[in-house]
Image (cartoon, rainbow, N blue to C red; front, side, top):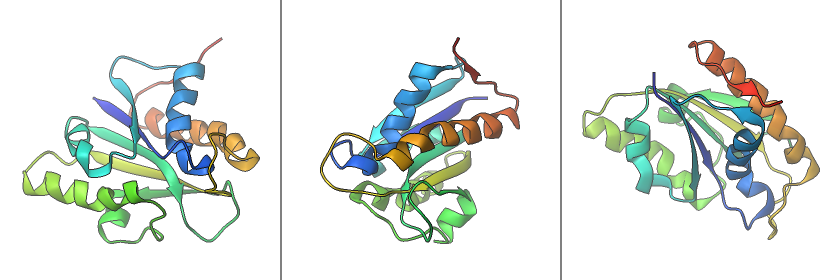
Length: 160
């Protein structure tokens, strides 16, 4: 099973860069097996739809605008995304998620199992650091990803 962990975000808008910071967090703190690719998707959006087509399981991590407090985490599945049941999009790179999946469907590409973990941002002001609630969210989302992967027999271990 090929797994893609895709972190989206803009590193110059504080919490908006959460997905990219998350991928870096996993690289630094976890042993990642060969069949798991950590991908810094930045703000590429629709330009990297092929990455989703190469995986059997995709975990997407990004900020989301939803009711809740900064640092609250929400889990969505492919159906939630395609039925537009996810909250309002916050940034230009999110424009491409539904479109990315539709392009893959039009190309008759395999449909990977898709999970989206969205975290509520505190600040989108210019800056390259996460706010404290989202900094704390890195390990919380990591635990959710570890749990998600364990369900399909993939193990991420913390580094010593």
